[in-house]
Length: 371
Ligand code: SF4
Ligand code: SF4
Image (cartoon, rainbow, N blue to C red; front, side, top):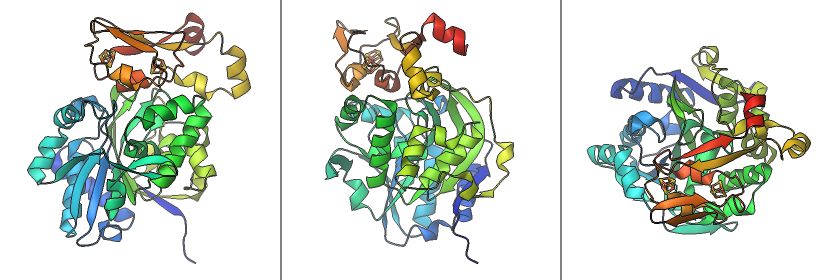
């Protein structure tokens, strides 16, 4: 009888040494059918890493260039042409800096691969998606595994939100202030911007206040699969979470975009038990997001968190200001301030700040309840 279970590959990789990463990425892809299953000679192949901020690879904010290099080489070996592209936070204002500091430009130059910015778009269901998604014959998503202050985790599904261009990302936040609505938006973007293959860089992941202000956490893990929902479900298990508790995974599953039931997912490669990290630290904003809605509503007035700008660390780059969906941030003489009467606690500013100048502050009750 034919096995129709969706497959997710899990492969151990201890560090970012070039050969070890190549071997691990190749093995992971081989376990889900091999690169030739997805890429044919002559194809133009878009590689979509997660490039959020101008941070060096050791900070674990952006996908590590060695993981992308491994995919570049595998794609080239098939006789196809890879290109690398993304639209970092802050609407591309600092995209060149992100390419430089993340090490992606250097790697792309060494490999002779074009590095492109997601600027022009095509509207699909009212969402502006980068034209490269449609101009390329194949799309390979290469996310970094990180915690996320809004969506709990960011990995396979959320990485495709980065194919949305321009100010629409902020509009998504202002239109979808409830976590459930934002999760639906991300799932919808994924439904119109689906990769053919996903490779997860979790050799060093991010825990704590991700996706940009958390701490690097060694996980020694590379994953691969063609079902992003299944990959995120397996990641939830590794992080000691229940897949359907992650709203983005739940909504994507409800929309029929993939398999989130672990019983229906076939694992291939190394033993998942050796990667499970139940002590994986989530964002300080996460506990409230896990509460049932009536409970959250009932105690919402007492249990609070808010973004806080450290003016000593702030450089006045204004990325937070242009990313705020409700114009709650003002800047005067290079000093940014938050108008908490307007702030809707979406934490977009915390996500995009390249200098860790925005922290998540919790009130005394929140600290008492969740430590
Ligand atoms: S807090 Fe300061 S450094 Fe951070 S994004 Fe805003 S302006 Fe830039
Ligand atoms: S100031 Fe408030 S509303 Fe604006 S981006 Fe930050 S958390 Fe969101």
